[in-house]
Image 1 (spheres, rainbow, N blue to C red):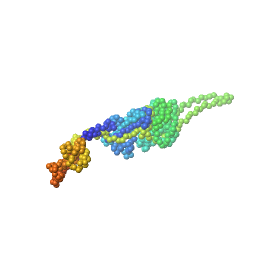
Image 2: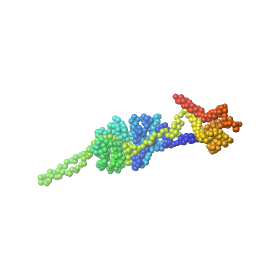
Image 3: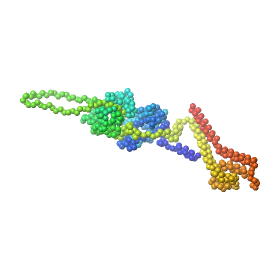
Image 4: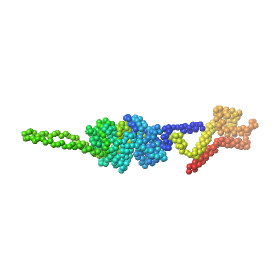
Length: 558
């Protein structure tokens, strides 16, 4: 009994993976690990607070347990206390696919960060916060999920597009923007998107080229002589910066293969502009952004300003040359002007466009490229599902909060019946165990004295308990627990009583004595059976009482 109570207490005190669940109304959770160490994304540069893409599918998430719209999804920090901002880009229970963005604060390089995903609460209401998912430095974030309407901005700045784009399925993350070289999407000329001279900025998107095009423009913005163009020349990404000092373009590197997705980013820090491809520095140009407050365009080049034509100078009448004045004066020299490149509209697909008003660190850009792309499995891993915490902090806490008074009465009766049944079962197990050992001991020594069935009961009590001196004192103590010995003892006692007073005569018994001995053995057997079955009726009452209480509770609930 002490062992069983100890085990029960141990089970009650066992901790779950965390000390307590964030909320016990959620039935399932799993731990997510973001790995920026050498075994994962191998990021060594600072990252900071960043939105992380959580890709859910039938292999790592039970859609049948969660709500149909994902309203019960909750993300909690590693401390299992702090909720994290999130929003859902796509949630499809039929296809078993979901894309959720979660704001992870202060993500460190070269380390592992953990967070919890909770789900499985049919009473939960939606708690999405798209604006809170992005930090205030992100001034534009497009998922391109809209169809036939202007593209929506998910940040707090509200920089939704002025025109609608052509949305297509099967992009890098859900749906994306399709560009055919003619259709474009215009960004607003808002104050939050305006740049001052020498401004810092980060532009990033997932890009897929249908074919290598010369001077294909992905993004363009111009304001007078100032301009910024991001594109690809025959598959090689470039950035082109125009200001009062002229136009500078980054050097072309290795071309990107057509038909494949790549993460393209451009970061300006006020001294130089860097191009990143798949999270790795690709090219740089020593230039600064000029002030711009005009709309920007996705998919084509903004028409450059028309050249300013200076008014013609008044004609100067030269005196006529006389035939003998000499040779005709030479014409002024003409300087060669380099031809401006011919831009074409980008043909391909675009997804997850973000613009920030700061120069993101290289670690931030690499985390986006790894976390959103094909290397996602190295960056983010899922643990197995866990049920509602430990017994004490999970199921018991739900009972304490939810049950009514009459239900507590039923629970109390059931608990009492359970304790009674445990006591009976423990007692019976102990009794049967002792009986088994003692009976085996008796049978071993009984075989040694089978030729004289009264040898074990000759002499005084010590002689009897030692089975005629054949066993040790410890074996004798065990023998007293043997039901077979007690039955045998009753028969031997009856035989000795029948032989009393006839020590010198023949050793035989009449039929009446044999019947009396058999009756004595039967009586001893009945007593042993009663001992074995004692308190079983209490177990039966406990079971019946528990069943009756459960039926009453079901009737009360109905």
